[in-house]
Length: 109
Image (cartoon, rainbow, N blue to C red; front, side, top):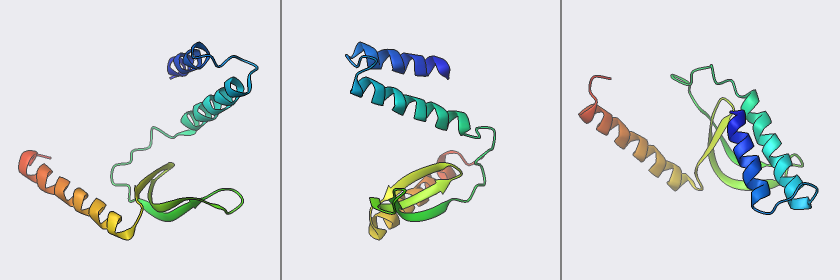
């Protein structure tokens, strides 16, 4: 994984973001935050049979709205699946169509 971060870091500086510059330092801070999140992931825990939790909208640390929508949470992973209830219903339909496809094409699972 560190090799991937080294490649990204090299890309940041090869695209003109020099160390010590505001944009270069901000990019490194972001890169380090991403690296920390990856290191904190519990990749050994299987998500099979995990039932997602949901939330409506996201908020920053001050309680200000940052993104409207419906989010599903699998452990530490959050996915925005829709912006509206109607969109969420369409998302559910797409999951149901996957069941049909799996049943028709991969019936040994």
